[in-house]
Length: 331
Image 1: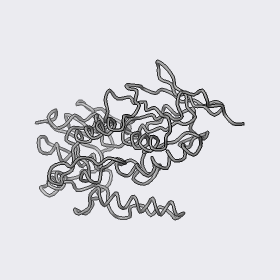
Image 2 (image 1 turned 120 degrees about the horizontal axis):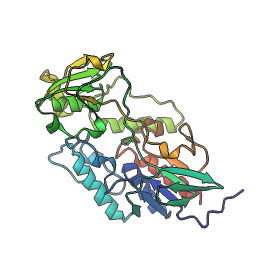
Image 3 (image 1 turned 45 degrees about the vertical axis):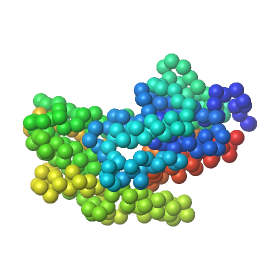
């Protein structure tokens, strides 16, 4: 049975206006596909609008480009901060005049007879193809521990920057990049206890986002050729951005073994830097685990499980292109 999609609103609907959504929109536009972006933000920039103000990329602007438009340089070959990325995404969206409706919080996606219905609380849209590009930032992961803290709980998702914590005692939980960066930053203005489950795995100082991008591309090519994913080997996990390197070398970034109960934590604040889950709640009716139940549903930019490097600005391009190509060929 061939679905009658002649009267759908669009050929494709993209959910999410961040880097994955914009890259997919670029290739859909180039393929002549009629699409609409639904974004839950108030303005362009995706989740980069929510990141803490001192967060920087792991690479220079030249290695942080969306397809078709270079990111403007920043400083003297420096790593751009979040507001530079937001400005770039805004200009990118304007340059290609993408059709975007915002703010739209998509609550559900359903499928019937070859047509998807994408619904918010106010209205719905139909299309034979849906690209979910909602990322992970809106689904912070917080582990459960017994005990109570008299201070304030935070997550990296709502970390406001160092000013709030000046002169206080802060527990930072998490041995990855966000934990190391936030602990390093706060160690300049507060007393910091950095809790990690394992010994931190520092990357060599000459490794940054450029090297990680090349490694991700090599992994992706190997998988595409039918080989196994070689992974990242013994490279480490924490990128040695300047602030992290200084804090470690000056003895301000010292790991403490993970607690068993929050009762053990003596701090005014506790910041969970414990990662995120993919924001897929709106797809509960059309996914089997993480796999689409029906054709025409695509997940782009969620991390390694959607492709090595796919959660990065530069790395998402090939996956966005492959998705747009498949949609265009299905017409």
